[in-house]
Image 1 (cartoon, one colour):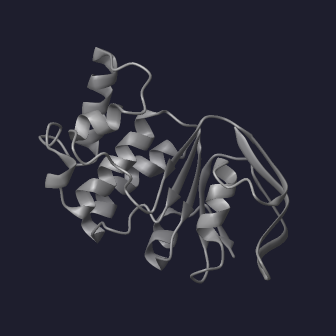
Image 2: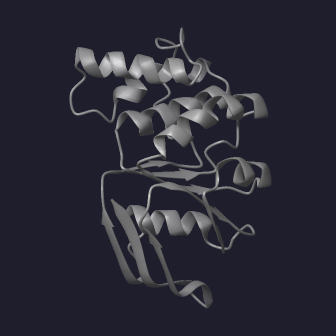
Length: 190
């Protein structure tokens, strides 16, 4: 598993966010990307994921990738568990068991059958994270994934992310200095 960015140049008209930017995400751990608003943090994640293809340079990657966006992007009229299972090829008994375990670890036990519209903002963020984790990625992209969570909840799920990152790559965009201090193995300042 790896992500290698080679000479990435990304411009919006006259505004260039990146010019010949290169970086190798080639070891397990948590990479925190920080910088001022509008400097290209989210754009960089979109380039890595393949969503944004309008750039110069090259992205080489190996490994299954999952993305937790700034917005929850959940299906509001179906249950929590069905949102989590929506990325699974088959909704087998094993997949449901695993989804329930992930939801429990994220503090959502008992909410499996709740509709998304019934949840708080922080609960929705955790459902988004659960959906990304059940996909079993080797590369996890987190775009302000903890923005709607209080410090206590972040502390509760921090060990889950750190354990996940022991043998996988987590690329995390954040404005929060406390998140950088808590999570970062490596810091990339844009």
